[in-house]
Image 1: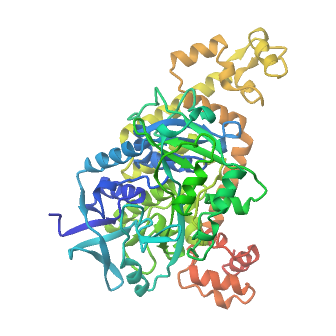
Image 2: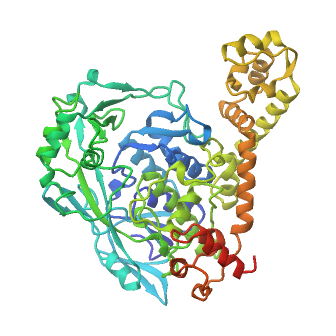
Image 3: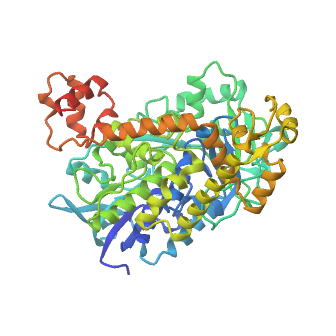
Length: 623
């Protein structure tokens, strides 16, 4: 049997739950991970991939802090691609295609290796609260477990309802039952709740596809990895994905079933993810388009199961099957399982503090889709932060909080608790005003020391970071002092469309030229010799080039962030009465009174609070 009491109880074994349990236990809290099915820990319920635009930055940040998602992804990926290489470095985003079964296995083995972490298979049906403070959980089997803090990471399981055409059945995902009781109890405590929707496409038999009719999408020629640690290595072989397209014929076949679609017949009323719409949505919203991309993604190294990315649907199975067979390359497809939509309960995240602790019940934390987010990466980073802060809460330490200029994680949490969300929240680079500072390549520089101070990132991480920074500084100093002769560099400059030099010039100055990269200069003998002798890594090459080429932008971004920090950290008293500020808009007073921001920065990010409202507030506060 498990113990009677724990420092931290984590409810749910998805991406948020895994990171939360790992963080709390590694930091020293006696932790229990309780989930409905121990065989589905870290299940990739939707697409078998990690990272992508902005999401890849989050995984790098999790890794830099000492979380596990980056390492798990490296150990289980079958393909790596750095997206947006043709754009500026703020947009570069790592993405990995994963082996679904290996991913879950690696997480399970990683969690089992943490000494202070226990496991139990059961369904939590209630939270025990005394005097406004959480003190335990109750399970379906009638077991009471005492806890100093509780983290709810229920995913899509709270009153989950699955839709396939006119068929409806309860479930958190196909094959797993829904969870009942927690929503109703939290409402009794005074929490507001809502409903959201997400969906998933069919899975098919890869042996029945004609890949010769599709476009191959191979991984990078020189693949990288997610983790900054030395525990993992880049892939030495990769599996390709493929791309095909829908057509007017496919759209016509799908439209035949629209009258039986829960999306259009009123069965589903909740909000779905705007940026990952179903195929029905795409056909309706983009009626002028005669085709849409379909990404054909293998589910692992050895399985024949394939994920049909871009074909999410809740149409009846017969309609799905008929339409998908009209897609090029899918003419003889065999379906493993149909796509479906799922509705579930969430709790508007404006009911949380920056630590992800609820404002209503002390010691109770929410992380993941319960907060209205969508995506493995968004869930994982919330789980990490909730696990850290639940541990800190138990040990009477200050909350660990990241600002908007420090991490995408900080942007996500700030957005959630200040603006809330009425549709599944997904991270984008456009949400981060300081994105030039928050790149995937410098996540370790930004956050590893913070993770080390917490006790999550180990000494090997700090040593690797120190070595990287030392190598970068020395290499930059070398290039700033070393000159190059025109005869040695002009042939390359001509091929790059850059002006020739007429006399000796410092090499570092050439790096700042628009069409010239540091790798172009490695062919210069003296640079090549230095790189080889000092084992300069590709990561250091990228860091140096970005630092030189974008120095003006980076300096300005840092200055803006520092100014905002000085201004934004002004604390607003909890008992502040906004209604006495008659010069402020009524909406501003109403929103500020409801959310009760802790600082000027948080207040300025609240939807409906205008800049003039902030000016009124600051005048009143004597600033």
